[in-house]
Image (cartoon, rainbow, N blue to C red; front, side, top):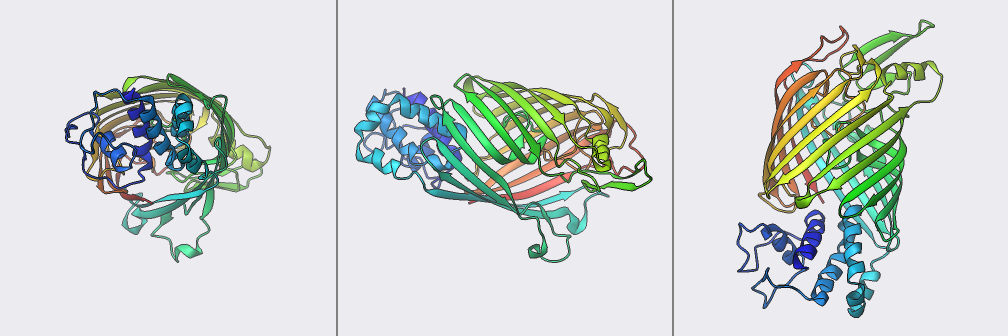
Length: 466
């Protein structure tokens, strides 16, 4: 019983990071124990106290009342947990409902937290360099995001997020003159049906086709959607429909085109002049994921695209965003406590033109693999990880909006490339990351208007959370 409760609560506390990381208070939990990090985090957060304040006694079975006390304390931090983690805590609360009721005033105090609004946020200072594409102060940008979450009742939360978007240091004038500050999250989440079901309505940011455990090759910065998800300990099924609300800004094309009336259109810096671009592209999607031991998972996903309208701008957009559908599969496997292996494949049904090279393409595919050692946790100073990846993407495999990858500037498709990186948590909630591509090879000769190059990409950034 202790292992089950400890694992569930550790998953929440590690992400919520409500307290500073402290020294191990228990003499019987060595630093090389698989449970060391979780035990320290839970003790530091006040969720567990041990026996006589000195011993954890990991082999001792705990009583149901002790387990209920741990769940009650974790519930006090639920406002900092993700939707999936809340569902897990709620499931444990159902398991120990009688014992929680016997806690009396403590449960009443937790219920008084309903209606509170909690604020979190993050900031990023980023450097990206690729010879001929990003250099000098054009290589630097920053972004700041603020999120507010309101616990409306025990099943319903509402979230509002604001972002500055990426502000380049090369822009003339101050950030106050920019109009890029926008609401990137406006959504309501509702748990029902034994709390295994989740209905989410509204706008979301950092939305990844394939789910959070995939590579997130196709990605939505701002995505308005209705999504229904069922999840238990063994699998999850997700279905939804939505519309992309941003063009993205990762193109390497300066392509000019004339319509049937001789009017010139241009495609530059991620924007269609006189057309809708990626903004307005609609998609229905579905995902099935299976969960295994040691927090490993595998999944398959599908997306169906469509665009309505008959204007010249819409016709031009369809010339590029012409994918009918795509499907993908991923496996994300943890080996022991240090190693992680990710493999991801996608096949895209499209016959049109690549947003990277400008070439005509047909049914491209992409293969991605990554091996990581260690795990950098914003809650644990001096934690770190190091990784290496390989990507082999045919021309046109990337649809051209945004991406969850660290790559950009024509380094996402029509090439094969290696990459390596390291993440290091300097202090609580402050992380430094460095990434470098190498061995990049262009597959097909780009169109004469394309800026795609096999020059290597360097990226470094500081990220802080608050």
